[in-house]
Image (cartoon, rainbow, N blue to C red; front, top):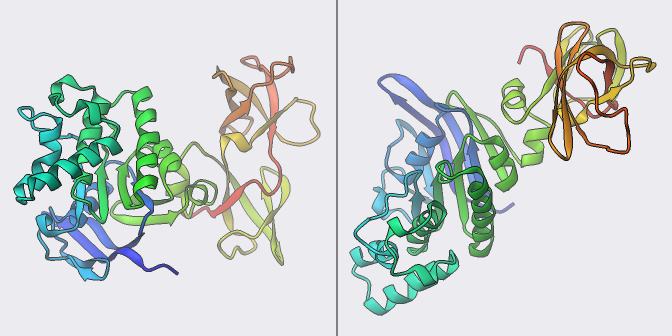
Length: 361
């Protein structure tokens, strides 16, 4: 296995006696795009600031390429940070902003000129070198901030919600640009966001945080399809949770009762026992809507529908009172597909598509 580029071990941090990070350990691999994902206040920005050196942990250690950085000041760490606010100098042009760090290091003028132009070409801003920040769009300003961080050739680039100030269309464009840039450079990116879709679409791996605790670390597919706990299941994407009870285990299969229906499922990531209360997790795209006369499924009523071009999203209230979100690809050749409000239907899914979690969290 490849040795990690960055290793965090048993990190703890508190402010005014309130814990923000609790015994957190995490590895970042060389050349990967790792996203720290979680709600506001979960500790992700604090963790990024600890890596950058702007804060110091109360306990634990930080190592980069085998060197202990725990007490090293930020200016001596071989990494750089792109902040939510780009903090460009308004009196300097694009070239001057990108060159600022190298000039402070008193690098030779020829070296500065070469490295700045390489960095600007990398972010496709070479022709904007003499413009001032206020003459640029939000996306261009962000790319200047990235070029300024990259010009010093860091081993690791930290990005603290750098896309949050952009409109939706520009944000999607910059997501693609950032991922392209990361692949071309081959350096590790640690990216902070609270946007689940952004994390899933950009990352090689996602670290989900909640209340200062690492909830799950895995690929976007693992986090989305096989969440480690109920928090991750609910936070990452839309989800439907169906209460069920284990009837028996059969080797690598588990038989459960869900709303009076007997279902046989693969063995989950924990050891269930007969009588145990569990939840069956199904994403909206896993649900199938059937006619009211179908010989299986849970009966309910359509209470909301939203046409979204390629998909039809429906909200169905089951007879039990539970509400189920369904997302189906629109089939214009099927006249029965476009459900009416108040229509009675049944909802079902294919055995094996669900993911089982203990009901106690």
